[in-house]
Image (tube, rainbow, N blue to C red; front, side, top):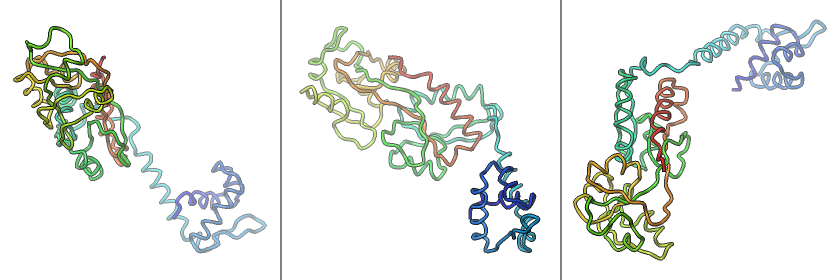
Length: 303
């Protein structure tokens, strides 16, 4: 059923003329006539008979007129009821669920909770652990309102907005005996490494792919799924760890880690905010995500 045809019916009923109806609707006369033809086919009735005094409605058209006009009025009310202004954060009283990895939790959650405590005391946040294969289902079924994560491949019917660009640095325990202010490529590959592999595990990652292009290879002695446990391992060993710069800035001092620039180029990555398109018209979700993109995005890697 094509609801776009019914305004044509109403205007012809009101004016008794296809040409007058076309003028009111901003359509051409052929387009209006075509719409009437399709509506006749859809409803199985001629609806109007052309006479010397204009378009005369059939008995069926007269019978359904009030229901069609009422239906269109309801649709107009629905459209008019969509809020044009977003609700203020302080007026929202709602529980939100966000998918985050441990990296997202460390980089953004403390600031988000702190900011909301002052600006939106009625808002509570629940974090759902990040599992790549479950993100789409969580968003589709409403189990999560947002996902805050790096997801290289797009998700069907999911809107993605960039939040924070990340680059990499190398960290090692403070007072490491093998380094004095600089880190060469030969130094980098001659030491053992801790690898963070948050998705499917393994002993190779983006660093190893980049080193292979340079004809180099490093020795990964331990692979873990979480960044914070990797930082703890680095702080208690002579192994090196390659992590996002923003993470090193936030937790490096707490773990007693020194930061070094990488002695080779390594592409960074973007952490994005994702939500399902079926939630686009939710004004409270829109208000929160606008806030998150503005406030958390300001923490983007400054390198």
